[in-house]
Structures are given as structure tokens and as C-alpha cells.
Amino acid sequence: MALIRPSLTLVLDLDERLAYQDTELELKRCYSYIGAPLVRKHAPASEDAPVSNRARAIVNFGQRKYLHSADEGADALWNEVVEHWIGNILHKVGSNMKAFNRRQRLIGLPEVIFDNFDIELQGGEFVVSLHPDLLGFVPEELNAAVGMARSLLNDGMFANAVRVRIPADDAYESQRAVAWETWQEEHPEPEEDEAAPEAAPKEEPPAIDYDSSEWLAYDRERKSYENTAVPVTDSEELPNFEREEVVEPPEPFSFEVDYSQWDVQFADGTCRRYDSSALAFAE
Image 1 (cartoon, rainbow, N blue to C red):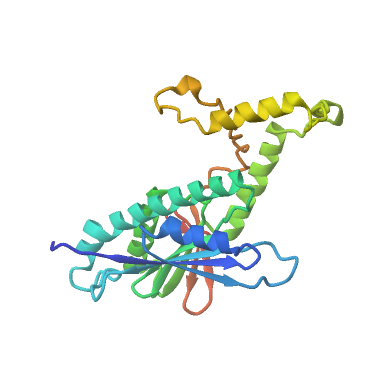
Image 2: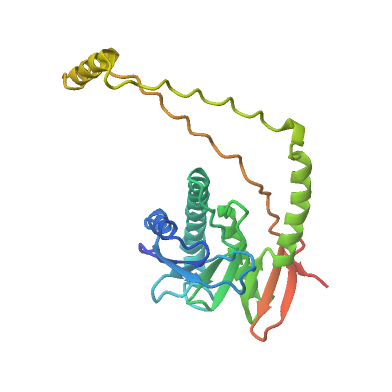
């Protein structure tokens, strides 16, 4: 197959409560080598609504058809190029999001977690909506799930489907609730009497008499040292500055997501639950 150069447009739609200027600039910088990142923002449904962020990956292979098997060369293009390329994109996006959120924690800014990562195929004709974990990571192995959804669309099982959510929203929330209970048991909050002891009060430096002869002698000696060139290799003569130790923030709550339960949305608005491990719709 001739060399094919796919392109990706990455749309990051942020809750405006998180859309700080620094956050927007860092997101653009973080993803600039993956695709053409477009950072947008939207108003929350209400003031007390939970923060909601969405990401969309628009897959563009020009005029080439790769979604429907009936199109000439579509299966070969999917098997040889598209599915592997999607896996590469998932790896890059997931790794970058984990690194980005670690940076946010280090500098004390809120993390940006996307509720969904939508992969829009063939101009949005068919969308596979993946749910990142709580650290923002999307396993690259989910490219196989995207390929499976495409196969089911072509086999007729998902005939007239327009979107597949992997996993289903309620399945994800159930998993998170169970994992949260387990995490709380493993990470109990410290009792009040176990709180860290208060730091000892710092001693105030003695008052300096700027008119004293000792201060004038010290000041003269200091200025003489500062104006003296010191060879760069003579490290013993250089002041010894203590490097501030970077305190790594604790790893936040997360869990391993089970991606087996899917919601399949059809063009008529209906939705059905599909169990990918049983290869059948739930009754």
C-alpha cells in the first residue's frame, strides 16, 4: 500500500471554570506535536454542576474510505494503517495527559480530566466514545475495541449505529463507586491526635546595628568577595546554595477500568447495552 499520511485534529473542550490562560497555553504546547490542538471552553450547565471536559479526535484520511467494508480497499486500509494509527494516537494522548496532570498537581493547579475521548470516524459518520481513567489515561489497546465496533457495524450487529460508548456511562460510575469504597478502606484518614506536630517557632535574627564597626567590616569584605572573579572550576570557592527538595504530591485516587460493557446508540435515538466479553446484546 502506498504511503498514507493521516492527519488528526484534536478538539479539547474545557469547562470554563478550568480554562485558565496558563492551562490553555500548556495544553496547546503539550499536544502540538500530536495533532492540531483546538482548545475551546463551554459554560457549565449550572453553578454547582460537576466539572465536565470533552475531547474529540477527528480522524482524517483525505478522500480515502475506511469505515464501510463495501468501499473498495476499506478493509485493507483499516487493518494495515488506521487501527494501528489509532493505537499510536491513544498512547500519545494518554501519556501526555498523565504527564500534564502530574505537572498540574506539582504547581498546585487543578487537573484536567476528560469525561470522554471521542474518535470520529469518516467525517463523524460513526463515533467511538472512550472513557479515560481518573488520571486521564486511555489504554492504547482500546484500538482493538474501536476495530471491533467497526466490524460489528459492517456485520450488521450494529446496523444504523451512530455512536458506541466504551464503557457505558452507568457501568463506569458503578465501577468508580466500588473502587472508591475500597480505596477509602486502604487509605483511612488520620485521627486528630495523629496529626503532624506543629513546627517549632523560628528564632528571630538579632537586630543589626548598621553603624557598628563590625557591620562595616563585614559589608566591606562581602563586597570585595562579590567583585572578585572566581574560576568556574574552583567550586570550593563558590557559595553553597541548598537546593530546595521537590515534594512529589500523593498519587490521587484511580482504578483500572473494565471496558467490556458498551452502550450502542442508533440513528433513531434508541440505545442498547452490548457485552463485548459475551459478544451479545444484553436482554
